Image (cartoon, rainbow over all chains, first blue to last red; front, side):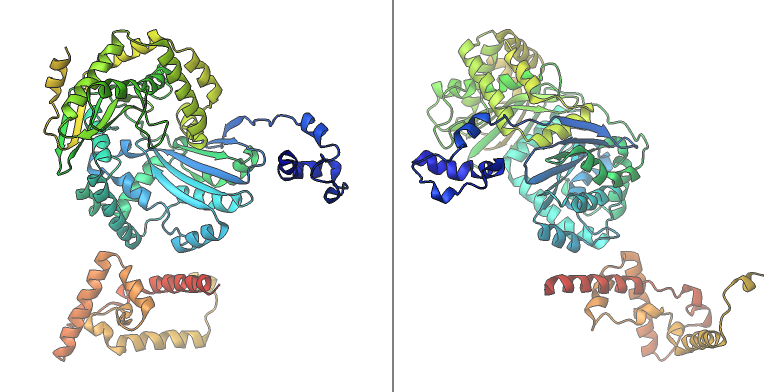
Length: 471
Length: 115
């Protein structure tokens, strides 16, 4: 009975489309199958996956799209290679302000009109900054593409920054900066970047507060002029076919073709330490060494090692994880509550790898020593095969389930001009051996670590103490 | 030559232009060092208030200075020395385009909010 009900609800539209529209469905009792339905079930073909198409406009703007058949909506991202890493020293934080000023009035459309239009259509617009990109995102229903992509393109080709609108945004910027300085996660993460990279990537995503009032509309215009040039821009659409994206993105042919300045590589620097005391009873500590870059040869290995050590919980609100190595190693000796995860942060030219721990200030010292010891256990070759399989499964599942397809395509196309399907990556992961893991951890350990701590630092050891206790 | 290539200007228009120049020169505000757009009062009109807020800082400061100087002169029942009077070419409409912009934006907003 239940199966019949399901039949009527789930497969019904398909049933009607396949030429059974003349059957009087109501006359067939629920206890009987619909005529011809079972054959239809058997002839059902597999859903075909559309490939990712990559091409470019006449001035070199990259266009990538993946059509998703039957998807009712489109996600679109315009990726501009700039972000906080390209900020000049005296304009640190300008990309943070630019993010806040992404949807101000332009010559042809006020910000109010933009807001009303997007609300009317039911879509959404957002702008994000990373260290390497400014990303303008739009999500909207199929059919609205021409209108919305055109208004997004005008943000890129001729943005305007009216000084009174920029001044209003500065108030929100200040709020955002204040919030970030109270968040230990952000303090540690920004601190790790600050001391781990010699230039570029060391710049914070958050503007320093002393710069906010100095920024002018001309600064924003200058930044856009320097970096919003055709070789830096990629447009990515998911749920839209390639030709219509090419057509809608036409306004971007107005972008200047100048080659612009090259983005300087960021070298890793080890041996740094940053301690930020606060009144909190908790301590947050991040310890990292040199990791891998995006699309580098050991990227898959790094991902597997991260899962091996533990990242995130598989069972929410439970008692943590039973198999993550870092957590297991610490829990053997400590009863108190703590949280520890491996971190694996990658950029186009460099990256950092390590772990992030949260615990009461009184036990943090012990947690760190145990975690470091576990790291060195792995570098000595102590890797269980079953554990490795578990880590590989987790990493593969993370890629397939949690992967933000739009962002994946955007980053790949922006940096490498092509797209490699996730299935290729899955093969790479399957080929990771325990020797690879040990080799990677050894190479990570060969560089000097950086430590950033925030909160109650009463027991948090200095870097030299951590290293001497280890050896 | 140049004049002949222009559209012929009617006597009426020319008369009107001459009248307006004469009127402006004699209405007195230029003798107090003011510009025509300084006379648009921000106190009683929302559009003008918003337009004044949108002035760049340096333009705003000069406007405030001219108004203060004019108030001071008017209190003392005097005018500026002739060489400091506002010259016709200085008397640009720095506020009018902004008032037009604001008026347009307010109308747009009103139209959406009536729906």
